[in-house]
Amino acid sequence: MAKYLLLKHYRGAPAAVNDVPMDRWTPEEISAHVRYMADFAARLEGTGEYVDGQALAPDGLWVRYDGEGRPPVTDGPFAETKDLIAGWMVIDVDSRERAVELAGELSAAPGKDGKPIHEWLEVRPLYGEPPLITE
Amino acid sequence: MTAPFDEALLRGLVPGVLGVLVRRGADFAAAEDAVQEALVEAVRTWPADPPRDPRGWLVTVSWRRFLDATRADAARRRREDVVDEEPASGPVPGVDDTLHLYFLCAHPSLTPSSAVALTLRAVGGLTTRQIAQAHLVPEATMAQRISRAKRTVSGVRFDRPGDVATVLRVLYLVFNEGYSGDVDLAAEAVRLTRQLAAVVDHPEVAGLLALMLLHSARRAARTAPDGSLVPLAEQDRGRWDTAVITEGVAALQAALARDRLGEYQAQAAIAALHADARTAAETDWVQIVEWYDELVRLTDSPVARLNRAVAVGEADGPRAGLAALAELDGSLPRHTAVAAHLHERDGDLATAARLYALAGERAPTLAERDHLTRQAARLNTHRGRSCGWARVDRTRNPRIQGPDDGMSGGAV
Image (tube, rainbow over all chains, first blue to last red):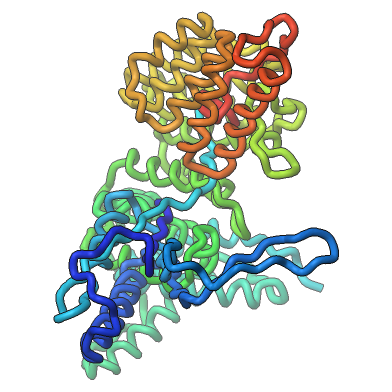
């Protein structure tokens, strides 16, 4: 059993196959996409593999500490070139193979013309706890 | 004034009670739900009003809950079926009910995570919420995992013996998961294995119990107050639980006397040899290597071979350990950590530092990553202070780390 993060990017991932910005889809295509994502999460809850999922707004900014008694320094919004996370899903699965299989299904979410987007998703293992028996 | 409430005692009754319901003809999934409801009721009412016969109380209340649920179900489906108030006199199986329950929950048709979840609930009597918390997943997800698992085994007949080895694998997983939130899964695994050992006479069951006890005994010493890992060689052995070690060694000796060696007995024997050494320096590495030879023969496991290389490094010197390591696949988890440790023992600190850093990047857990990165930093700091890339004079740095950096080869 291991947890994996499936990471979706607004920017920074390699180009998808069906790479058309969402504002050029039809409203029905957008609805179909949203429904696919919701169904996918519901299905994973049904298989006992769903942990968490969140979407992120794109308008973020950089913040850093600037010394005692001073307000934090900010920089933003993000420049166009930055890698930009769009959202994530965390799953709890029996194997890495299963994580890859599920990421593949999520990447098949429909986009323009109802065809799969084939977008690149980043799959990252979460650190677990060290095992008790190690020798 | 209420009597102290012993939840472990209550949960110890679960397998027997569930067995009674199934023997009376209840289907497993419904019976399991009914027992869970009775448990919730027991937790609520027993502290103020403890029953004289706890097991009888649980059987009665569970059976009632089962009948209520069945009736409601039947009504919902507009069925005419009438369930008799009297217990059905189903066939009495020859094998202990508890044992059957273990077999069912570890059935080979289940995935490991499903078998673990079902065992914790149906045999362990934990609630879905507790199991979910222990695994850091939402309760709804765990509820689905458990109900799917129940469906998967719903067609399995309850009166056929299964394979003890599958049960032991599941209990081993529960123990080794290492999570300890509200519910201590390692302690729960020990309890379930102890309970299993009481109903089945099998040297590997005793071997696994011994293995768990011997590792449990070291738990307090394996983590520093700040949460960082303490390698075996650096642990304060005064903090090892001697009573638990004594019990583990006794269980192991009884198992070994049966002369049917198995992998858990071999692993327990290695743990017992560590437990036996008053200091790390007194460890009988020659005997430990012999046990690893047995373990490799029994399992042909790459992990056993990797840990054997660590032991060889201690018994015959780091060069011998490195030679043993060279025969193994470099992509094995923790291989790099072992290589780093052996190179350090061999005095090649530059290589060791590089490999520790690499092992840190590849570590499967955060605690190991931090530990390995610290090892790299320790070596880099020494080298930076002395003479750059040249080797440090070992006589000025006599403190050599234990056999287990990065947890391989018996860290904790």
